[in-house]
Amino acid sequence: MTPVLALTVLLCIYAAGELIAQKSKAVFSTVLGIALLLLAGFWSGLLPRSLIEDAQVTGFGNVIAGLLIASLGTTIDFAELRRQWKVVLTSLFCVCGAVIAIILIGMPFIGRDMAVAGAPIFAGGSAATLIMTSALDEMGLAQASTFCIVLYVTQKFIGAPIASLLLRRSARQFRESADLVAEYSEVQQTGTKDRKRGPLTLPAAFSRPSVYLAKLGITALIANFLSELTGGVIHYFVLCLIMGAVLFAAGFLEKGILEKTKSSALITFFVTILIFSNLAETTPQEVVSVLPALVLSAICGVGGTVLVGFLCAKLMRIPFALAVSLGISCTFGFPTTMLIPHEVAEAFGRNEQEKAAIPNYLLPKMLTAGFVTVTIASVLLAGVAVRLL
Image 1 (spheres, helix red, strand yellow):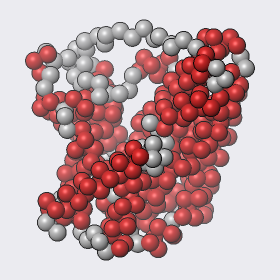
Image 2: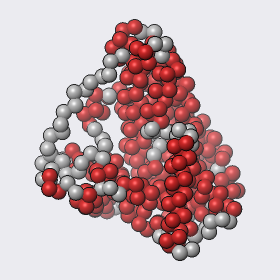
Image 3: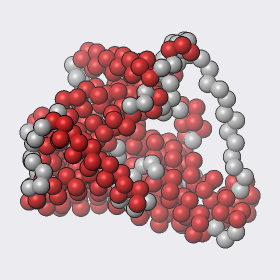
């Protein structure tokens, strides 16, 4: 297949995946739609196994992924994380509990490689999946790589129902407190101020898409240099996230800088397709063979989250149902962290005041938890897991 035809086919599949997510109101995620379409095409013979290779996506995707992850680092708001410290700690402890449970309990049953590879995927995020699948493909661990992708595209169906059920319980408890309802019935104002100029802030004349791309490139280059200094002990993608946050705080990078480059959709496309690059060699038998590992990982991950959530609820003095919901947000992230609180408010708000108060109470916590687990924790955990393979 010619490169332009292969690329066009992949673009159409990517667009179809987004349409599926939109029409299903995010019940079926974009990545699930893409995975199913690619597998159906490969297994039926409608798509050649060399499709992704023919499109010449793999090499460029690996290089460009650092820019996307560096941009994720600019979304880290340290002031907001300090304000929500209970949410941050609970989310981190819960996701670590899930990862430890998957590794310790899973190793005797599904093997060391599968357990270590799957644990950070449960922690959530495409960046973590990219880190693990890239490393596994280089090591020739095809089955473990397939397992990571299957877990990645299905984990939302594990966590979202649990979070919905538990947040409903939290909403029922919340609405019984008239003082809390009155406090949260008005939109909470945090008094946001214009961000101070950092020491590396460039003049306004440099506010151009080409400059934004160059800044991201410089950030990724620094991260790559630092990774080489550590001998690869700290993964390149982990340092991209860290340097993105550091250079954002210093004023060199703008918040959500990737969107300002006017190329975010294309970069996201390349990175997303890169995650599924090994599906071309995946057979139906391989997918079926990893299902027991998927079930065991789900049980261990949820069990670890519930256990640590119980402890955090006692120590942090927050409702148990809310603590577990914060931890399990790692399996779905945004926008589901936004959708569930609104759905719960509509279902359990008995009047307009309660319907306004419930999302004001739940939404900031769930958004922060999803960000901490999916954007930060999963990348750091994947960087550690790669060293354990």
